[in-house]
Amino acid sequence: MPDDSPTTAQRATRRAPASAKSEQRIRDILRVGREVFAEKGYERATTTEIAQRLGISEATVFTYFRGKRELCVRVISDWYDEIIAAMETGLPRDEPIRVQLHFLIRTHLHLFLVQGTGLCALVLSEGRSKGGPGQELADSFLPLQRRYTAPLMDLLARGQVSGEVRADMPLRTLRALVLGPMEHLLWEVIAQGRTPDIDRAAAQLVDLLWSALAAPEAELAALRQLRADLAAALARAA
Image 1 (cartoon, helix red, strand yellow):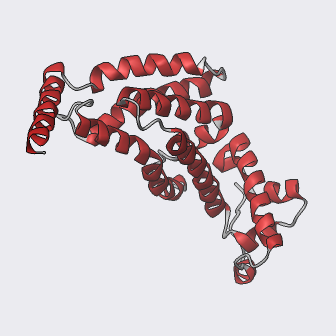
Image 2 (image 1 turned 180 degrees about the vertical axis):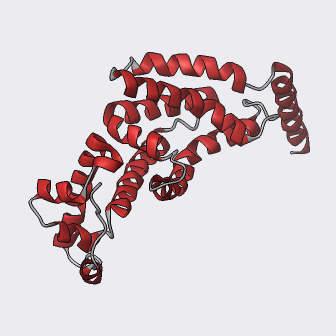
Image 3 (image 1 turned 180 degrees about the horizontal axis):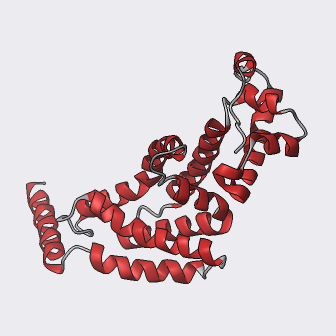
């Protein structure tokens, strides 16, 4: 496998961007880097090919990134930022938790399956590497994955507070309950190369998951009664 680490001389010349031209160069490297990593995965992608597609020298890539791993982590980080922004910006917070969950699941599937299938395969495979060269990359993904799952964790936490989501299970368990079926579906798509009907898949997943996530009716009824009692007490006090 080619060694994409820079030489000492290349590391010495690496500099922070100081101009609009440098900023554009970084955007170009990240754009083409995303294409190459999505097409070839981490192991077969090279900074040489990224440079060639841009018509620049490999040394220019190393001017802005220490090597392939740093570039790949930045590519995935930017992709996660786009996914998080889409989920947080469009989330219908005034709707019931089930409706919000449907939005998160559908958005997640859409961005992974329609816009990022190649990167999805990279994250699912490299993000689980244990030992060997892939371990460093997998370790680099961990903070990104925590940030990426934060909107779901917040949704589940708010659901527990409102009484819509069962409170007898830790949030980490509930998060795994939601992400597990989605990851299985993503692997299936990667293996078969066919994208499912995302709207239908999202609706089916929500139907399946909500039966496990929803608070028991007795617990929900008790919470509603408590709220009614509190409202009545406040009204009397006023």
